[in-house]
Length: 114
Image 1 (cartoon, one colour):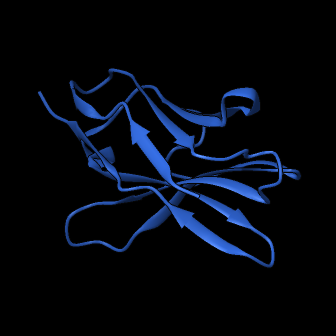
Image 2: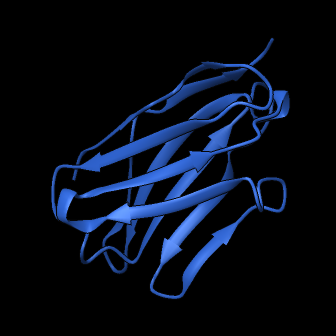
């Protein structure tokens, strides 16, 4: 399964961006659809997850970011509002399938700066 993320860019603090991740195959059977990020000098961290159990968010983005999916389009999204400079990172989408493994997209850079 190949993943392609898009939607990154430069935004001012307080602004919004929406990231998209499209899979080359159906996401219907995926156990979890995730967004991770990695800031310079830091470890990759889970930002948001969509699974059959619902959605989960990192404490740092709770209330500002929303993960959603469009299964018919094999796509999931990360709506990011009220962006802060500390949200600057390379964002990666991933899809986890139980007993199969995790698929990763190539990453898209989000820069929050005035």
